[in-house]
Amino acid sequence: MDDLSLVATVALVLSAALLGGLVARRLGQPVLLGYIIAGAMIGPHTPGLSTERDRVVVLANLGVAFLMFALGLEFSLEELMRVRRIALIGGIAQIALTVGLGAGTGLVIGWSVQASILLGAAFAISSSIVAIKLLAGRGEIEAAHGRIALGVGVIQDLSVVPMLALLPLLAGGHGDLATSLLRSLGVSALALAAVIVVGARLVPRALFLLAQTGSRELFIMAVVVIALGTGLASQQAGLSFALGAFLAGIVVAESEFEGQVLAQIIPLRDLFASVFFVAVGMMVDPPFLWSHIGIVLMMVAALVVGKLLATTLAMMVAGVETRTAALVGAVLAQMGEFSFVLAGLGVTWGIITGDQYGLMLSVALASILISSPLVAAAPGVLNRVARWLPLSAEQRRAMGTSGIYVYKPDVIVCGYGRVGAELVQILKHGGFTAVVVDINPAVVRDVRAAGGHAIYGDAGMEPVLVRAGVAHARILALAIPDLVSASEAVRIVRRLNPKTQVIALAESSSAVRALEHGGVNQVVQPEFEVSLGFGRQVLRWLGVPAADARTLVADERDGFYALEHARSVRRARRNIRPDEATPVAAPAAMVKRA
Image (cartoon, rainbow, N blue to C red; front, side):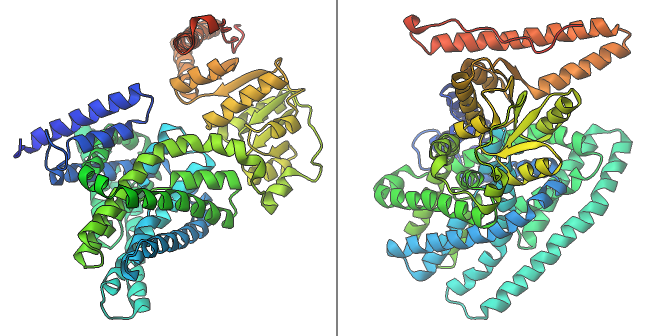
């Protein structure tokens, strides 16, 4: 199969991705790990069934475009502006610290100054694609650390421009560094402004005209052209292809077509994103990796540990509280896809040798493989060491001057996002007292300024829940995306006040099972609840009496959560010995029927 046709290549890549993803799922691992390993199995460096990587790269670029375009659709300008100061200050500080880290690592292992600087630049760039998949898989894109990590990723993509301008100088060329950088930055700034301004004017109009034709085929074709065309235009202007696709998504997100475009792009995004990770896995060279295992492990340790610490420090300098800063560091503690480009150009310009290129490639791939378990372990580790983490001045102000005061609320609301904020208003109108627990000091300050009760802290920390009044609270409402913190909060509440009823949000069926098994009285899936509300309105418009509509919806809700509970019980019984089995109480009904 040395001369596979394009169709055969697509079939082989997707089959490998399917098999790798299924195995990863069965083992309880993220599917992207399965994709990467599947890519290694069919890569040119592995004996047996293989295909040409160059063909796969073409398809992988489509995955980059659609993934970043979809992210832009979901990541509005308003959200981007909300983290602009943190992303700008923290992003620049993170890049500077990580370039220094990489350059120092290169000098320690005997590389030239020029090669070491190139290594530092490659260290500084994280993988936006990996970060998005990790955050989306954990339901944390909307979390504080998710928004900040994506904002910093945008700054990293913009830093590509000065890095490219440095390459000729590192190769021994002559010229004024400042002039070269200013010229590149100026051209890129103009191109960036043109993409945003022109796109904001033309794209919505074009989509409106196409929507009027009533043709789905033309509409989806236009969406694909916008995503790919903007990415290519960005690349020609000296920016990254991924950044261009991301900006195109942001432009479309500000139009009335955002929902329809997102719905049509998601299948393409998921399909071609898997191809991207297969292409990454195909770069693995097992013989080279094994022959240089010692130096690779040392460089990986320097990259992952050093970049995590450097990013955490940079975020704290930008005003981010310690735990969130560390979570951002965990998400970004890998080399990115543009690091491959830098390394390849480094060989072309004679800055690094072929062996040095192989080392950089091996380190980048290893760091991507480590990313998933690192992000999964980070919240639990931080919960254990939180008592030794320092608080910023803003956090101390958020804690309040009366550190020993303990609230006595009806409800403790953990997480003050859209759901938590609405819940607090409902409780207020119902005459119930509530205390908000949030990891964001600014949120705590705003709640207090509005006359509410709030304390800063992680819901998974016992001192925080004690001060929030867990000994007196009738209900603990967990409206947070962090499953680790939520599970820890449930454990603490069950020990300190078993009478407290716990209601929690869950983004997925696996989260429902984990929380129910941990002792939550009622788990709520937001998307399912929205569908019930929608269904109730449809029934009303069909002429069904209000009481009957409520009964039908209540039956559907009870059936759904009873099924999830039954699955949780079966899973728990599979994971314990028969002599250890104990009954698991069914969750309490969430609503009373009319």
